[in-house]
Length: 456
Image (cartoon, rainbow, N blue to C red; front, side):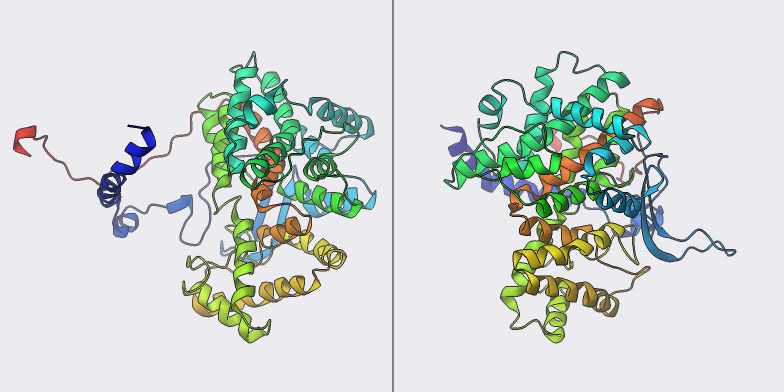
């Protein structure tokens, strides 16, 4: 019997066993309170448990403690190596430069590069922007996947086989591996999509080669489009998006995964593949896709864009009566930021300009209306320990759509950017010779005797 025929035959049994597995692993919520377990490594007010130290980035959503030891929500601040992200973006945009390569240098090496250092680093990345001979044919085109993140993970793990020093975790070798992956991620992501489109959507197969003179953002658009063309505005905005997603502290899920797996002494390819698995989740890197699909559902369900109609839809989202019935308004709220997310503020300053250029002004106005109304609706329906505001995912999916980037590439493009932060954190973990990360779990199972098979 063929394997898949057998699998279809036994699926009813597996489903029955899955109920047994679910029931045997459910834990009463009272135990979490009894043992003061901080679920998600966060306390009841949403503050993260201090699990480590980092010198790479700082995320601020609250003031320093006052004389009573209390903290208060404040405008969100994000700093890369001590420099405010808003200053970084203002700096390279004022000089009409692309900023992703400069930001990568800053995060990896701790300081802004001078003109020669930036030129040398950009040339280094350009030189590494290639894949092993026949890699596209032998790896990416074999068993094309409908999920680009799985394709990216598979390619990363396969690159291990092409590396003669794959298991060497000296800082020099790890840096070499990380720089190669930073340069290769755009190629792997776009090629995986082109192959997917060809096999699953009967589209044309365009495999452009990268251009050494182009920035990372320009190359992404060049590789993606059939004619290889793009506007300067499109490239500048994508570059800015890459800068904003490059790093976000050691506690975000994928970066914490990077620290955890690095602490075990694993090779770079295994570490990055683990981080990619984390980023794939809709609660992390896949959130902007949820925002776009939520908006599509909203436009289908409401008769007009009045405040009342939008409010009613948002209420239905919270009451699990609309969209995916999760009870969430995607793109609103963040684990750390409350008053504002600085990344969302920066993106918003560019969104209107892009929306006008793409004829999407009406959609932009709907986004701004939801950004205004959602916090009010949430406050009316739920108890909150801190305020909520639009996060980076709220606008990033809209921007990606206007750039003509398919939803299948939303999360891989996030990875193209965040591989820089993962690389910096991996090197930081290895440089400080820390212990393997192993938190404690309290076992609450009752003691039982082993029974012979005949007595069960």
